[in-house]
Each structure stands twice: as C-alpha cells, then as structure tokens.
Amino acid sequence: MILLQSPSRFLLQILQDRVLSGDKGVDIDCHTVEFDDVRYHIQFSLRNPKVMVLSVALPLPPPEAVLYDGLPLGAIEAIKAAYGLVVQILDPPKDGFDLTMKINLTKLPPDEEQRNAVLTQIASVREVVLGAPLKLLLKHLASRTVAPNVDKLVALVHRPNESFFVAPQADKVTVVYPMRFQDSIDIVLATSFLQEFVEARRTAALNNAPSCMWSPAPPLELKGVPSDALNANAGFVTFVVFPRHVEGKKLDKTVWSLLTFHAYVSYHVKCSEGFMHTRMRRRVESLIQALDRAKSDAEKLKKLVHGGSFKRLALTL
Image 1 (cartoon, rainbow, N blue to C red):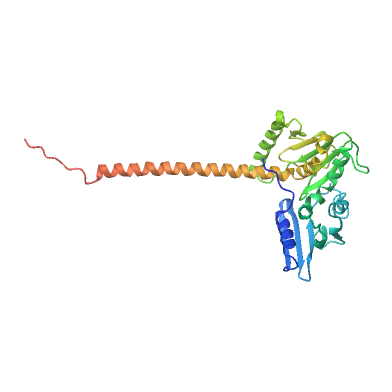
Image 2 (tube, rainbow, N blue to C red):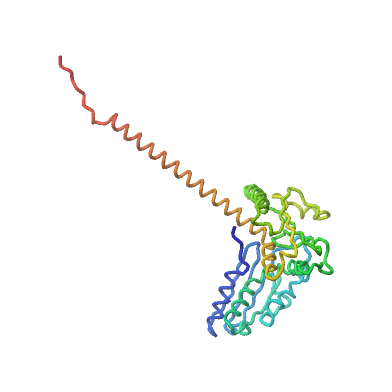
C-alpha cells in the first residue's frame, strides 16, 4: 500500500529553488491544485525575492462542518505554532482563497537540516490547516481528556462538500467516514477494497493498529446527523483510535493518515482499475496474436491446395 506524502512537492521545490538562488530570482505568479481540490497561489516579486505570498483555498465545506473565520478549528494557532516568525498571516485573505500568508525566507534557520525541516513544514500547510482540529482532539486523547467547548460529534471537511465525523472521548476517539464515489465501477471496487481492508486489520501483524469496521448503514455514532451528510454509496468506515496510537511522534502520522483516508482509498481504487485494464489489454493482444497465427496457417494450407505445386499424372495402359 502506498501512503500519500504530506508536503506538496511542487511547493517544496519552489521554496528550495528560491533559497538556493541567493538574491537572484524572477517574478513568480502561479497556481497549482492538489488532490481533494486544495488550491495554491504562489507569488514572488523581484523587488523582494526572499518573500513569498502564499494563498490557500480549502475544499468547499458542507453545511454540517463548522468553521471559524473560514478556517477549521485551531488553524490559526496551529500555523503560528508550526512556523513562528517565518510566517505572517494576512487578514483578509486574497479573493477566492481562505488563507493568505507572507513567508519571509530570510528568517529561516541558518542550519541546513533545520532549514529544510521548516521548508518541508511550509509545504505541508494543508496538513497544518485541515488537520488542526483533528490534531487538537487527538492531543487531548493522548492525555486522556476531552477538548473543552467541543461537541460530542465534530464534522471535519476533507473533500469538496464532504466531511468525516469525529466523536471524542477521554479514552478513545471514534472516526467515521461516509464513503462516496461518483463512478459505478469505483463504487464496486471501493466496497470490495474496504471489506478486504477490514479483514486485513484482523491479522496478527496489525494487532496494534486502530480497530477498523465497515458497514453499509450509518453506525450509531452518526445518530442525529442530517441525512444529506449520510449519503454514502460505498458504506461507512469506522476507526477507533486509542491513546497508544497518538503518543509522541505517532500523533502527526495518525493525523495525516486519518485526514487523507478517502484519498488513500481513491488512489488504490484507481490503481486497481488501471491494473485490471492493463491485464485485459494484454489478454486481448495475446488472443489477437493467436488469431493472426491461425490465419497465417490457414493461408499457407490454402496455397498448398490451390497453388501450382501439384502436377497431374497421366496413367498409361
């Protein structure tokens, strides 16, 4: 299984190139889009080549998701904690975007390893922003407490007009995903993939992983959720996270894995579909080759029968 990487490779490459370029540089004004419709607008100017203006547009939130000034719960605090003096949040953000930041590359640490770590963190801005509420809830789980002023069921946006649900408790956090796919083939493959995913969790090698369940109907944790938010054509996946899953360095990995679970499933569904198409094409090609060989053999036989290689012999008495 392939896990998606948190840093945006395109954004990280631009940052590294600008740091290595010294005081030289060119004007940059470009847009890029990542999976789940996260959009970036990157700007550099010749007047100030070491300052980047980065605007981020998050997926369109569904009605059940709660945002604060257009951002998820705890996003501003998470940005300040992750970037410190390197990043300044501009208010209001640019039109069409949810967040605009001014990144001063002259304030990066002089040590190369630390500098690369900060650049990688900047390129992981989608994890910092979208994962802020989930990280807050799981931090409290690590200390076996519940975050104050948080509902019993929290809807977090992760795809355009789609959310997943988190039910925090002191001893565990339950995460539920309504799985939706547009293509009929994707629905069939995803349903089969998720059922096998649950079965794989039961193997001895994965005893320490969060428990995983799949059901065609909404679980009890989603009681009272509007019906529009429960419109899932590939069932519901539930993970139960315990304090041991978010201890120390496990926290960031758990947050990213839960935040991108739907994209993870979609990626492997498309890979499976592409693999099957490749096998089908190879099978068709082998059948065509067999037919071509049969055709050439029949043509040779026809030439032997109707060709001029036979002579009529006259019998003399």
